[in-house]
Amino acid sequence: MTPSEIAFDDQWRAASAAASAIISSSAAAHGFPIHHQDDWITERFRDFHLKCQNGEIHYCAHITSSPRPAHTAAWATNILVCTDCTGFLKPEGPKATCCDRCGTDEDNLYGSFAASGPIIMAYALCEACARAAQQSGR
Image (tube, rainbow, N blue to C red):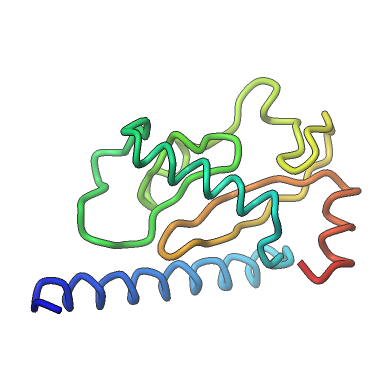
């Protein structure tokens, strides 16, 4: 590896660790469970990565080529923002009451996060999906 590749890898690892720490501290502060990734959230991350490869992502002005924690949402996988700009991910309209796992329209949703490297993805689950995720250990 070249020195620049080593530096990038080091930054990637640090940003990934920071993303995990953000999720853990948010979970502790707000009392929501951390669900490990299952197929549906993995598919949302695949969708996000595909949109990145195809140039279909809208970025906030603070996102640079240097690895750092960044945020997207299961309902908005075409948006990537820094921690200060997470307000741009607020769901609107039907997305605000829709379970990201099963699509059920539900007024009472349970929010949580998952990470893939330094990318943190917010999502919301209906009671049935949250219970199923909790029971499966995810």
